Image 1 (spheres, rainbow, N blue to C red):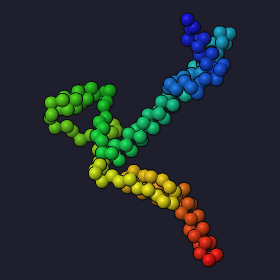
Image 2: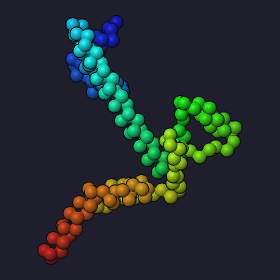
Image 3: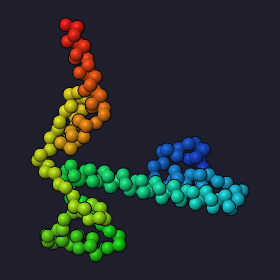
Image 4: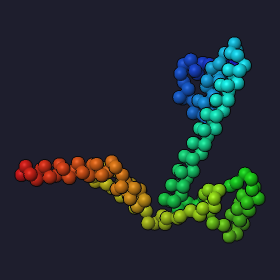
Length: 169
């Protein structure tokens, strides 16, 4: 059976790092690539740098997740509750209220106790932009799309083409 270091070395040599989709592997690949003859000071410096890159990547990933959850819950009206690791009693109280049909507190998404804005699912519509040939879900996406640079450019181009056609007739 191959050791962890041998497997990592094989992945690095064959450049399969992009295929390994775990948080931390890509950030620690320089450390894994060090050989045994590397001085301890350099090894420690590379390790410190890898830890910093891991922390940065983790924060970035967490921000992406929060943005996705916020967008998804606001558009679909799904309730999301923030669970704090520093307050396990609050999480237990929430589960207890859910299991025993007790009143559940207002859902919060962030640690700042910001209540979510709910959108009624019945008010959802599928909207089609004829200019861009895109299908959009709901008025939030539709409004954002109409304000987008790509939509405005396509709309202006379409107007120019229509003007050109009318001038030629």
